[in-house]
Length: 340
Image (cartoon, rainbow, N blue to C red; front, side):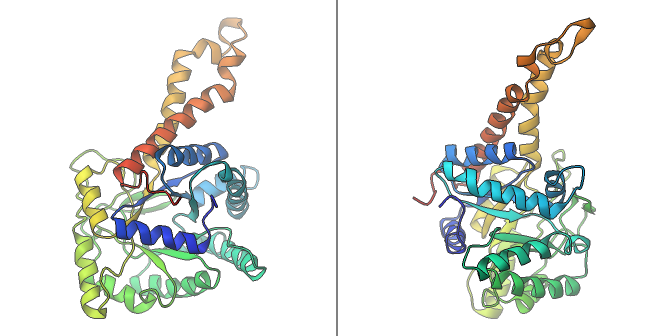
């Protein structure tokens, strides 16, 4: 069961929350980065989450048509086949989708999974993200209600981002300022609109100073202890302890202490993209610099086919990214927790 069923995905998230660990959610853009993520999880004996952003899906759709749905469906179908060779369980997820891309990405994918479920099959993806952080909270939650109902009907978990994450990802950008902190009132309004599980399960990307990308120390002030306040504020109103399953966005460069505090306060999923992109590319750059006269036809020579063969440097890239995924599993305490 390498691709999680809806029931197993729920079990994965419940186990993470109870055990105070989180799953690395690895952005992939190709069959090779998918294998790197799967390999990293397997080597760490950790289950995990594979995710595809709108930009990643467009890239996967090919530069001729750049069709996001085609790219996402193709990789998901590929993952269902190749993941069977890895002794771990993974969930498939779509990352940040803003309002102007819903009709071209998440809504069609929800429809595909709804048809699969109607036919007695499992959904193609196990969760989708609605990124309404650029909208007013009222509009964000109104769209979230609609999508949550559709997701629940298709046995899918919805991820919602209710307040901005700083930096830029796939064309959605926010300034790095004091607005990057979710308030207890924001959390209560979210619970009022989306419920606490009775309307469908959702993951909450709350903001505690998170920033996408990589920044030098001091530029970003993370306050993961804020998540405890959000849990307590909603628990006091609704009588449900630790009501939220949180997602940690913009985690590149976070300290071990910041990650630990986030895990203790309900984070069950942490996104990794920037770090794994670098880990994939760095060995390739090293290979090209060291073998420039083999990968290039210099001064009338013919180069070295074994050196510029994409399989040669591609294997190095896969290994580099897999190592970074394994490190992430250790940092998030998911190593050795795979479902047997």
